[in-house]
Image (cartoon, rainbow, N blue to C red; front, side, top):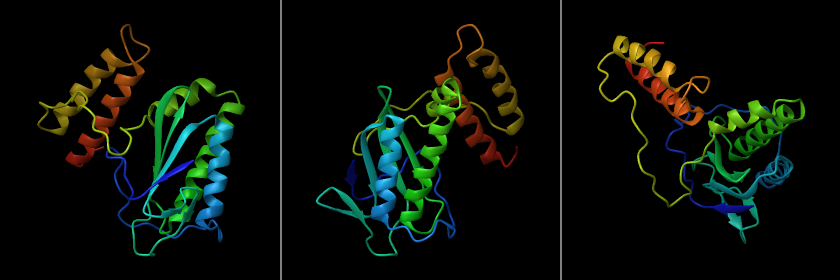
Length: 193
């Protein structure tokens, strides 16, 4: 596990405006980091990078910096040969965000053990990593660029579902997931559901 300072947040994941107090107990960032690393190893993750506003001691352990800095945590890793990323800033302490990621990975491992391996592969499609910190990426296709209101958006979405859904001939789970994420962002911008 390697560490990166300062935090490089996932651009496609909105930030939590008002982080809350977690009830995870008194885990240090160091202990939470060890637990997270263990869960990632059990999952089969490789080349793990933790991005945060906490400094590391000799690139080995996390130590909390000043309490007023960004509490978010992003983990970048490889799984089954693909780059993935997960982020958490829901909680008001960085060690709690690390712990939340640890619990999320543990739950995902449970899905795999309980026979949901196909579901697991689909789930991680949503966690595909943006470029590693410091890299740039080409803009993905914008499926709703010409949409002007929520009614047009909903009509276009229904058309695209018929075209891109993985169960349709020529459909693609990757393209469908990108389109669905764009739809959610746009529908929220119009204030509809």
